[in-house]
Image 1 (spheres, rainbow, N blue to C red):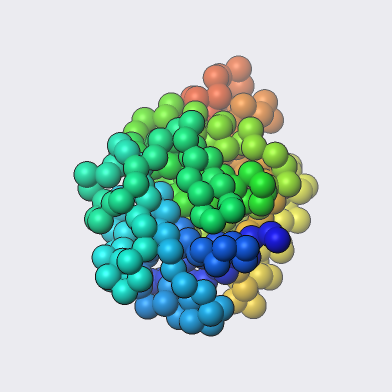
Image 2 (image 1 turned 90 degrees about the horizontal axis):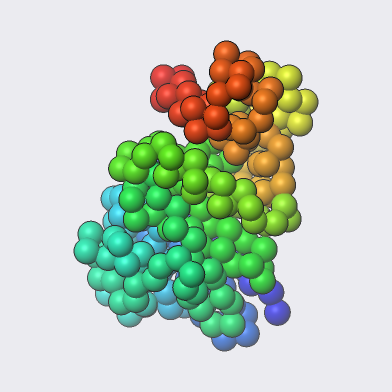
Length: 255
Ligand SMILES: [Zn+2]
């Protein structure tokens, strides 16, 4: 039986997500932005929380951990590099390792840049990626702790995953990202069509996620920093991908 996934808003624009293994009944929350909406989602589906898979230490991803752990006794999984600044960690993981949620298995991918210890969870068997604040739909996370080279390297790792992978992100930022993306890649017809769809989705108050990674590879400028057309549009013809990525990220910071 395949995994069931429930996605819902937390706080103002954070996504909460639950992944449930019907064969064992185990259920993991991806991050814990806030306990109440996670409890509500569990109650809605009749699931019991057994694990919290933490992506990074920011308050809006860990604030609900202690409340949820006290209520459910669930296991808290986090990056070894960040365990000292994430509450109540039971199991540390790092790249090359895996974590199981019942019969479901996630590979750990180190994705530094947004924070130094940020990780993503790739459930290859389910074709699902939880990228949190590294890769957003049509955008990427701000580079707070790592370097631009770290972030570009992390995005290249995620870009290497199969096109049919369903991407789940930490925030509903797609509309703002779409509007920015059009300014740096205006000739991209797939992006223009997607941006129009995102405008409709948000006008109807619908989520823009999950989205297939294959579409992101065609439409997300931050995954296309090595595209000659984008470099030319930025006036960086012949520059390396890292210089183009850095320019994209700095322009988005000011957008
Ligand atoms: Zn963050």
